[in-house]
Length: 168
Image (cartoon, rainbow, N blue to C red; front, side, top):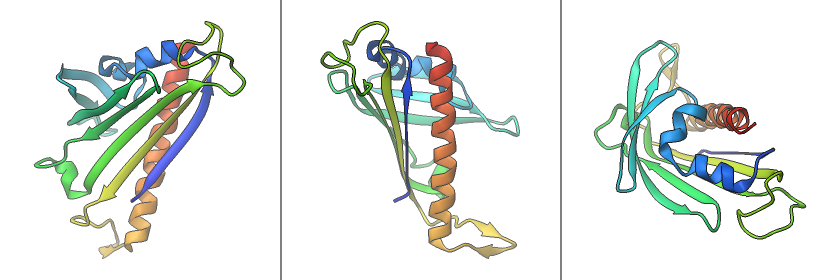
């Protein structure tokens, strides 16, 4: 399963970052390509995104876990019956917020000037329905996994850039 994980220390207290990452309505402020969030209810939400080509794409998610004590939130994308199902059989994003190394205090309640370590991990399983192709030839599965991991890593880095920008 292709897994991409990036961690970064952000100069903001855990409590502030938790309020951002645990509330889907904040996604347009920091998550790449998300223009708005709709239908936030009962542990679910819909992202409305713009592709680089300017097309609107919708993606539905379930919040699998949101634990303020551990600073962890996990979203799972609903894939059945969507265009994403041609490429992915599962897609899960986990975000963790913790006091930066060396910060005293327990849990998310750290001093207001404290820094936080933020880790975003995306786990995506390829469906195999639409193997990536170059020049009409299907790529090896391992190459498809590398491509997915590289794209996910870039998205995570952009998301962390967004979190840094709005928490400054």
